[in-house]
Image (cartoon, rainbow, N blue to C red):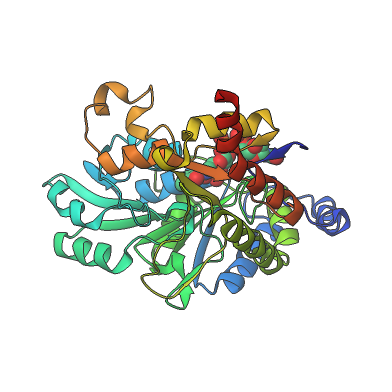
Length: 377
Ligand code: T4K
């Protein structure tokens, strides 16, 4: 089998990218809110149908800026089932992450557990729309209103998604998008904050540029998180392909689902919809039940790798089990998240992955337990 990785960055036609690079040479403007950056922000607002957007060098620093700008402190309720960035962003701002278990249906934070974790020190909820599956947005909003908390969504996986007929990033106080190379839509590295409150714009813009408001007014202790012109060029060149890329991924996803449905013990991930949702088909996660399938998730991971198929265990280990956090958080009981993190496997999905390859991968998954059985005879 040829080498297949969990994802591969999409690249536009080289000429289309080079047209923007020519402009950079003409402008002699490389970073700090250059003309391509400004154009990219406008085109993104139009595409996503949102009023406010601030661009960043990457998603992590966008999240960091949101946390700083909203003045979060004390404790923030969050999920253990996510990428390192979500928790690191809190921790590096001297905030204690308070881990809430996830629900088994869509793997987002369990809304029935949130309120019991709120203390006088809680300032916000930082929830993740995992693989683009929306959190229980209305319930989270109600809880936040009752307890006067801010809500930030890590929407790293959600580019182009809508929830109840508007961008999913319009919910909560702020949402963070990742525009990393491995995402459905990217600007090489990149990130964005999306929000409805227009007053945030000034503070986000300042925080990503050393807190500078104008040449003589430095109002905040900010860092450097600016998107540069080369990133904006890639974003602009990629934008026109997004709809086509989502349709292609939908076809790949539907084929996976069709071919994996008969495989006992492999559950593809397709939660009940709680709202009107337009997905972007970013990831292809499956849950492997060893008792039914006959092989553990780790065995499947290794066997696929032996056959040149490189899946990923997003998200294993749980954040609470990371070496850097183990001392503080290892004792916290998060039974659902622990179970899911041992069963989850993200299968390859990217633009350019052929349906033939998907069939091969599914064939391999459906026959692995039999091959093992034959070895035992
Ligand atoms: N919050 C959440 C929930 C996130 O998932 C992420 C990022 C963030 C926050 C932070 O956003 P950013 O600051 O990154 O914008 C990858 C991505 O690097 C990371 O952005 C993403 N989540 C995470 C889920 O996946 P790794 O450590 O798995 O990346 P890596 O280098 O192992 O690449 C994965 C696969 O992609 C490999 O099989 C190779 C392939 N690949 C990768 C790159 C970079 C390519 O073929 N070409 C490439 O250029 O984290």
